[in-house]
Structure formats: structure tokens, C-alpha cells
Image 1 (cartoon, rainbow, N blue to C red):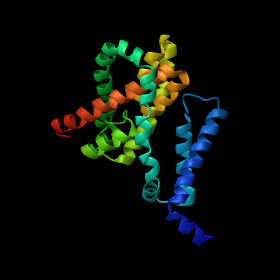
Image 2 (cartoon, rainbow, N blue to C red):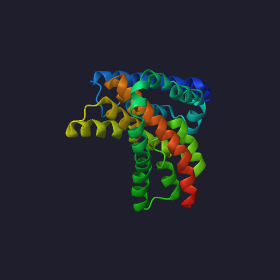
Image 3 (cartoon, rainbow, N blue to C red):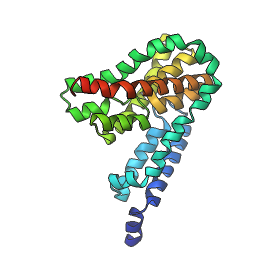
Length: 236
């Protein structure tokens, strides 16, 4: 048994099986709980994966290496979001002016407030660099973090927390402010909550999902272009 366990630790089979099982279990629990916005299935899956790594005594570095093939799928999955964008293209073209006006300050604030809070608390530069792209989808944020000298692991943790809190806060604020327009809700979820926000947006409807895809895509492009440059200019 120990020999079998040791051999599995050195192959991708165990890591991939753990990841898929945790994801499916997380989504099943999410459905059983009534699809709460404060606890998405991906969060439950992440917790189950962490528990599995601890129980199986699987090193995190080995796990990341073994699931590299799954990580590569993030890119095609992000590109596939072009489909709902195309389906809702008429609505998007009609609102291109307000979208372009609100995108720069929204993307700037998404990066600024986390970095500012961490800086005020005395966080080291590597933490600041890891938190800056936390509202950008994972394929882009990984590249940004590597450019500005952050930690990918820390950034991914911030990415998960940001997505979960975004779905919760947008839902609460929508009720308080009586905002029901799916275009506004979707765009806010996409700009701030990346892929997790998009999942929540598609639960609201195809229009919200399309605008969330647009918000995430534009935020990613804007951040990828300007954040590394701003980081260098500020000498961080």
C-alpha cells in the first residue's frame, strides 16, 4: 500500500483525480445549499483540494506540476467567452461610450485599494506585487505577477478571495441600491470578480454573463498593458 501511494505521488493521476473530484463535490454541495452567492462551488472545491493535499501528504509544488495540463485549459476557457460576447454584440456596441468611460477608473481602483491597504499595514513588496492583479483572470494575472515580481501562489489566493467577496458584495449592493439591470450587474461582476464573477453573472442570465465577460476581458487587457509600466515608474 505504501509503495502504491508513493508511486501515485510521482504521477499526475492522483493530483488530477483529486482536483476533479474536489470540483465535482464542491459543485454538488453548492447545488445542495441552494446556490448561495457567498459560497460558490469553486471555493468549496478549493477547500476540499487543500484538505486532500494535507490528507494525502502531497507536496504543493508537486501538485502544481502534475496539474499543469489542467492549468493550460484556463487559456482556451477564457477565449471561449467570446461566444456570449458575440451573441450580445448589439447591446455592447450600443453602450461602448459608458463602458470605455467607466473601465479605466474601475480597473485602477480594483488594483489600488488592495495594494494601498497592504502598504498601510506594512506588507513587503512581494505581497504588494501579488495583490495588484487580483481582479484579473488567472491566465493574465499569472503573467503580470511574474513581470512585477510577485508570488503566483499568493496571487491565486487573493484571486479566489476577491472573486468570492465580489459576488457577495455585488449581490448585497444590488439589493440595497435596487439595481436590476443585468448589464450593470454583469459588468460589475466581471470587472471585479473575474471568472468567479462571470459564473455568478451567467446565473443571472445571458446578458449579464456577456457583460461580465466583457468587463473581465477589458480589465485584463487594461491591467496587462498598464500595471507593469506603472509598477516600474513607481519604482516598486
